[in-house]
Image (cartoon, rainbow, N blue to C red; front, side, top):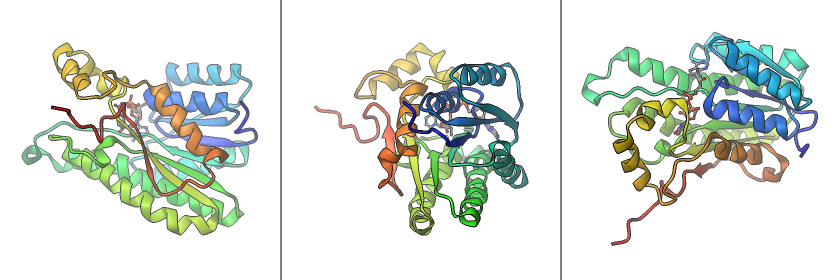
Length: 256
Ligand code: NAI
C-alpha cells in the first residue's frame, strides 16, 4: 500500500515499542520517516535499515521531548531533513509507579513534561509550520486507556493522559480551519518494554489478562495499524476524538 507516498512522518520515542511499530507501519504504507529518541543506538540503526530496505527514507534525530526548546528544535529539524512534514505522531511517553502521597515534584515533572508539555509544544511547532506554509497536517497523540479509566498509584500518568484527551478535543476545533486533523490513540495493555515488570510477573499478568475481554495483551503492530488509519485520507473526516485499541478493556462489563 502506498497511501503515504510523498508524505513525511515524525514519530517521537520510536527506538522501541509502539513508536518503532508505528514508524515501520507508516513506512510500509509509503511514508518517509523521521525517527526520534533521547539517544541514537543500535535500535535506531536497525530501524533505519529496515525502513530503507522497504525503499523509504529514514533519519534519526536525537532529542529529549520533555524540554520545550528540544521538542521545538526536533520538529524544525525534522521539517528540514526532507523539506516537509505531514504527519506528527506524539508517541514518547513515560510512567512512574508511586503512591500518590509519596510522589515527588521530580517524578511529577518527569511524567508531565514528557507526556503533556512535550506534546503540547511539539504540536504548536508543527501547527506554526503548517499554518505558515498553508499545508495540511495530521497529528496523532499516543494517549492511553488511562485518559478514561483509573490507574491507582500512577496519578501523574493519568493526569497527563487525561489532559491529552481535552487537548485533542480542544485543538480539533482550532485546527480544522487550517486543514489539520488531530486524534488520540488509546492503547490498553500492549506487550512492550514499558510493561516488562508486568510481563515478568506471571501472576500479575494473569490478573491483567483476565480483566481484558479478548483475554490477551495487544501488540505494538495492533496500535500501529490504527495510527496508520488515522493518519491516512481514509480518516479524512475524523478529528477530535480518541480511538481505543484495548481488546475491549475500557468499557468492559463482567457478566454475573
Ligand atoms: P516504551 O517505553 O517501550 O517506549 C517509549 C519510547 O519513548 C522509548 O524508546 C523511550 O526512550 C522514548 N522516550 C521516553 N521519553 C522520551 C523523551 N523525553 N524524549 C524522547 N523519547 C522518549 O513504551 P511503549 O509501550 O512503546 O509506549 C509508547 C506510548 O504508548 C507511551 O506514550 C505510552 O504511555 C503509551 N501507552 C503504552 C501502553 C502499553 O501498554 N505499552 C498502554 C497505553 C499507552
